[in-house]
Structures are given as structure tokens and as C-alpha cells.
Amino acid sequence: MTALSLLVIVVLSGAACGKSPSPQPTTDKPAPSEQYGDVITSDAARDLDPSLQSAVEWAQRFTYASRSGINDNGTHVTAILLVPKGPAPDGGWRLVAFGHPASGTKPGCGPSTSPTLLDSSAVVLQLLQAGYAVVVSDYQGLGDLAKIQDRPDRDHYHPYLDSTTVGYNLIDSVRAGRQVIERAGGQASTSWLALGIGQGGQAAWAANELAANQGWSMTLLGSVAISPAADITGLADAAEAGTLNGQQQLDLLAFLSGVKNSYFNDFPLDDYRSGIVAQKWDALLACDPAGLAERATIASQITPDDLRPHSPAAANTLRGFLEKSSLPQGPTQGPMLVIYGDQDPATPAAWTEAALDRACKMGDVITIRRLPGDAPDQLDMAEALDWMNQRVNSVPAPNDCEGRSS
Image: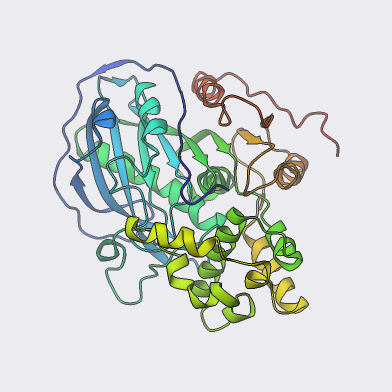
């Protein structure tokens, strides 16, 4: 889990090659469909940041059908697909589903309409330069309201840190991205990878668990989860004890908002907020540039009591919702690389270690990298891309679960 305003700067390298000419995207808009991963609408994206545009042959923003992890309802989610310059590799473009860091909880907070993808352009650029086509989902509820709510009863809220929802969203974005490529006259591989940071790390991990059922007709080669929001149950303990740090306060705020929207009539929000949090609730959930400065000012005034559950029963209820969203929920389909640090302000290393222990007991194959606080690259993305390249080349993944305490 990372700050809502997390800036991501990474260095990746790699290569892919092939022989087919680069296709040009169509502007056809297919009829609406409720099949998971079907493209609802698509439009050319021509306003990318120059640093991204330099590596992109063509890009499209699109809306696709996905699935809520809360109630299993069909949802519409927005995303952007970026196809790199040069010929596609043999077998077609292999997609990487990039799980973006937390960016907000309201419609319009997603990165797909931002020229820099809300400061994730450095990651995406290097993936493109490595020869991957990249699809970036906004996640449920974060796209433009007019695109994600085509009828009054369509769920359009964002269930922040609901791992199942964002896992579905990543898988379905790959299926949709393949459709966009094929409708443009290109070829897309059926194998894919996931890479995510913070909330996106949670999404990449969850997608690996869900791929066996949701990812039919595609093959997930592996996922990279960096600083993943895996075991988040500690937020309940910290809220009850009054020890939440500033980033955890914002994460809990966003999580409570998602739970309230998911279980509107059954979740008494005021059992979990007081003081300035209750008074300035909407301002604290702002993601627009104009509201970020005010949000930061208000957030600096939050006291421990402002997010303390009002009773032990309320704390237990909160803990239950956090457990429902925590990972692992089940075994993964493919191998994982999990990178985390000693100094992550949102998810202490002990929380991630607990999630890894449980995942290893389920039989997962995980390469584990715990970075010291003084590591020069807290994301270790050079290793991430090398690990992905090995999966593409069918090299068995190192398994650090072997010998881990049972």
C-alpha cells in the first residue's frame, strides 16, 4: 500500500522482437456487451506526455466490462492501452497489466486520462521499451462517470483495497486490451504478466489468485507485486490503539468510504469517524489538483481519536472487512515476485511477512525481496523486469517459500 500521491520512478530494461507491421487502431465502437473483458467503447489517445509518446506506436482509451468483487455485479471500467513502436514479437503483443498505485476513490481519479498516467509514466515507459504492450486499468469507480455508469443501477463507486475487485479488473483489462489490438488488425498473445505497486501490487497479487477462474483462455506467466497492500488487518488494530501514521489514516479513510458505498444501509460510518474527519469527510477524499492542497492541510490536523472505532464491537466489524480484503485469499496460479521494504509508511514489513507466510503455506511459488531502508532503489525494478523476462523465456521461478517456516 502506498500514498495516494505516490510518485513512481523506476528503471527497467528488456527486449522483444518480431516481424509483423505495426497496426493502426480503428475508431469503431462496438455495441455494449456484458461479457467480462469485452470492449464497450474505445477512442484514440493522442495527448500523452512526450516522454511516453516517444515510445508509443498507438494508444487507445477504452471502457470494458468487468466484475465487482463485492456483489458480483457487472461493471464498466475505463483503461488505456499503449502499444510500443516497432514490430510485434512472434505470437503477437504480450500484454503487461500495470496496477497503478492508489489515486483516489471517486469517479475521475483514475490515471488513464492523465498524460503522465498520474506520474506512473516512468514505469510504463520502460515496460514499453522492453517490448511489452501495456494496459492500465483505472479500477472500478475511478473512470469518467459518463463512461462507467451507463444506467442508474450500474455500480460506479470504488471499493478501495477490495482485492477481489481490482484483481478482476486487471484480468479483464488484459482480455479487453487483446480485443483492441485485434480490432486494430494486430495480433495479441494469450500469455500475459501483471506488475503493480501499492494498491496495484495488491491487484497484481489478487489477479494471480483469480486467474484460474477469471482468466480463461489466457495464460498468466507471473505477477510482480511491489509494496503490496496484502495483509491490511493491522489497520484495525492501529486505529483502535490510536497509532495510525499519516498515510495509514488516509488509507483507512478511503477504505471506510469504499465499505460504506458497498454496504450503504448496513455500515454505520459514524462509528468509525469523529472530529475533523467527520466534518471534512468529502474534502479528505478529494483527488483533483485543486483539492489536494486542502486535503493535505486537513489531514495534518487528524488526531488519533478522529479515526478510532467507537466500540470494541465496531473495531471487530472493521477487522472483519479488512480480513475480507486481505491477501492471500487462495493459492496463486503462477509464480510471483514480491518486493517490499523496511520503511514503507503504509504497510509495515511485518504485515507483508505475515501475508507471505500464509501464501507459502498454500504452496505458492514466490521470489521474495525485502529491501533495507537505505536501499538506493526502493522498488528494485531492474530485478522486476529481469524476473519477468525469465518467465517469458520459460525459466523456472526461484522459490523462496522453500525452507520458510511452516
